[in-house]
Length: 485
Ligand SMILES: Cc1ncc(COP(=O)(O)O)c(C=O)c1O
Image (tube, rainbow, N blue to C red; front, side, top):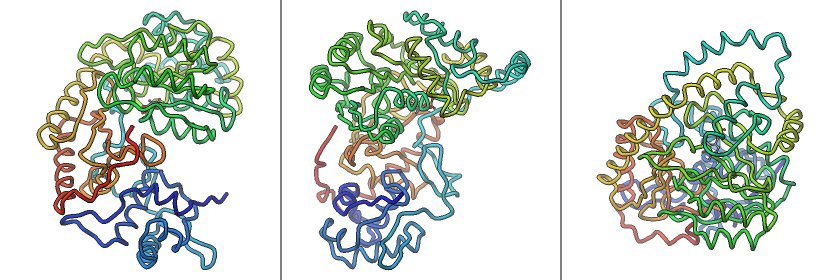
């Protein structure tokens, strides 16, 4: 499979690629090569695609062909490009790279890196005892084949009970256990969305959800979220649904990733009613629903406003407990669950029994574990906010009252350039454009508060140092981005 990126497409992805002003100024060809490496590392430029011919890219970027030739040469030398005379140049990665937990490509020697690309906590101390207890339980399952396409009954009961306790009566046959929330989304999309189907998503949104939609070749309409509360503009969102009449809408109403916003009960009700009236199915991602902070009261679950099986809810253990468990679920009508289970047989058959038993034990201890997570996240968020206020006071942030991330509006469309500079001083960032489409959102940066406070403070110090370094030559060369979501 060979795909090709055209000159204008690459130019759009590259955005503000120019050599940065100030002390760190490098020649244009090196800056161009660095920007291409950045796109490869964060997944916006796939591996194995053919880059435009030198002349075509030079025209698209309005620079000399010699600069492009030198940049391509540097990329070949660093192992990021393979060329065959007369045939073209393909993107690749040096053998020293691997896929990091963010899904991004990273060099192997990154042990000292402070990784702010991942928005997930290390495992809680209760994990090991839960794993030991699960091993004790395992003999009960060993007499069978071990395939449970909707999940083991104990876990489905525990998950159903948690929904019922939140005011959404749920029976175990409305639950299908999956290998994480991402897997849940992928399965739902396989069932609910024909290739090329029309989908509405928030902008910014969760990058791996966008990747799952891209894999279905979805045609995407976006609803832009504001940095400030309440984030969603009710009229625009409902108008967007009425106008686009998408087959499906993917929303994260509970401490949205990346903005941290919480959708009001009133808007949930109106979104569900409007979706039904225009024939849109809603996929509601509740990844962060267990993590309200500051005593924030949760509105009723979005599905509690659903009278017509329009809402499929997905969620999982990764954020309140541990991502390494790979346990998530779908809550839908019982017939939908049966259809999902049938679709799953062609994918992965079922989830591991042992991991599901670990999840059962953790859920039995959920109130204590989650309370400790909330206390930890509150302290880390506050340390991050204090460091930002002190070191980068011109950045605008809204304090998130839940979840694990904050969404900062920067003092210029510099997110990708800043991420590249930060990588050099040992801080990995996920730049704003990762959370949108078409390379927009350069003015924003997601900062998770899942690492210890000392690491967050150190990371902000390093980011501030490279930020002000970018500034030395003056800021005037930055242009306003075409679109700000
Ligand atoms: C909104 C959202 N959905 C899904 C996921 C993936 O979760 P899981 O690890 O359960 O697959 C994440 C992880 O960051 C997320 O933020």
